[in-house]
Picture (cartoon, rainbow, N blue to C red):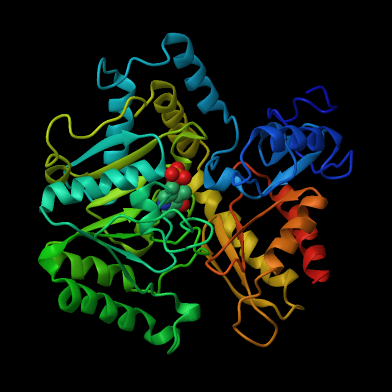
Length: 452
Ligand SMILES: *Cc1c(COP(=O)(O)O)cnc(C)c1O
């Protein structure tokens, strides 16, 4: 890119919002036409622009428009796009070797990532880590470990859950459209319990945790029998479901129910983990210690890497050769992950995530004070959402988030939607974004709310 201002402040993208064409511009429209002729219709993108460069808090498109990034490629570039430590480590590794297959010829980087995750994940028990490529693949393997360790078949998941798109994880995902529709039959032995979703709990938020735990205990003890259940898989903050923070005490109750019955607790931290919520792991906010922790999205700064970290006795239960994958723990992705750990530590990004969350929450409340469509603003750290409802009701406002996201894109801000009912705006800015850019983006968002 040769647009003026490159490189600014050490980033590959100038750190300001600037539109130089209509959105999408002519180059993006040209690519959209090529795409329509080359890609299947079911593969969609939320933005109409095509990326050319990104860094800090900005994505520059192929027409030279500078867009403020409030999505981090769906919670992946938490430390920023092409973050310096990530680039340096990955580039060095690219020159050393790109692949030997860890199953064939192993290398140190994999071990270093495993040691780091063993140290950082909740609990000071002995742990082991296995690496994979995607969140779905890691969740599937967590279930394999849990089944191998318990010799039990069943898996319990929750309403509003998202665990991936592979056959097993699509089955574990709660939502028919777009994730499951027409893709069955599904995997057996997956059962669903109600999530303690305070905003939508029928008898109100105060009863939510206790009643949801009662329903879970009923599913386990009455319907299935505890000795049939390998694991409960839960997102400590639900991502695609709408950034649902479970009612206080719910996760601790789930942990206790599992412990008492020899059921393993698996935390799917794919979206909420790796500094996103102001802690290394979202489980820490509730003080739970899962038997297995699954990470992916934020783990390697955009390179495909995922992990299952768990109690040594559980992880060692799978037989030799039973777990693996050709590309799993790719050395370039491992190097990038070590760069991510460096970025988080050397730039105090846990604290930065909390500050971003405070700013976002405060300003979102301010700019929406005059509107009557906010059901709830919630989240932790730099994982904040606004659930939108029809005025004067708790009915989901199903088309407002898409309209707001569209208005924002037209004005140079990229924001994502979420929620079982599609009525949630979610904010996942890279932690490398400046307050100035955040405030500018919130100004655009205020304009979008004004058009409702
Ligand atoms: C994105 C996501 C997954 C699936 O990860 P992929 O890398 O897309 O397979 C699983 N669990 C959660 C909580 C996620 O947000």
